[in-house]
Length: 191
Image (cartoon, rainbow, N blue to C red; front, side, top):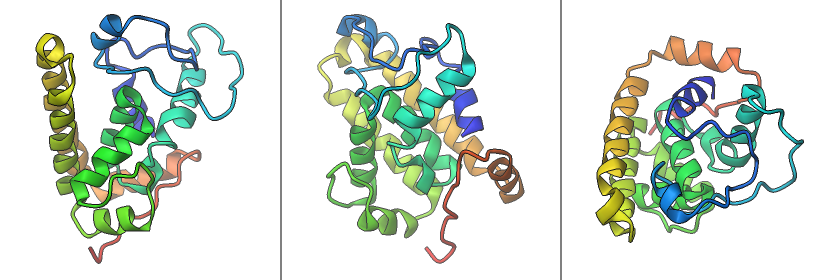
């Protein structure tokens, strides 16, 4: 999660410590690639201290990382899911994943979704996920005004996927052991 948080927090407009969606107009949300407000967290979070990166990371973990199912996947896919979870909501991100792996898109990560994803290489799933995400963007009513920025985001995410896919297993193992909050389920080598 640390690597994903560092990448996600580097995007413009991502540094809010508020656990609640902003009341900004859809036009202002579109400038950061958000097409609709994020859902409220399942339970109330403590009032964040202004500028607290640790609080923002905790909100990100609880509201997006865990709810988007990132804990089940290796880094190359987990970042893509978390980024889409922040921008489209966790359920929509999961539906994009389900379309990418060819399962029913019910928005819930269950055995069918996990088995279908594990039957493919994580990099292939990430690429198919990003293709679904680009299609999602092109279907949005804001595409004529915001499509260029959204496509740039997907292009940047393709570069992140390549970077994360080439991360050695030793680096990935080190990352997992350093982060005690995240337990990534090991990707099946049988797939």
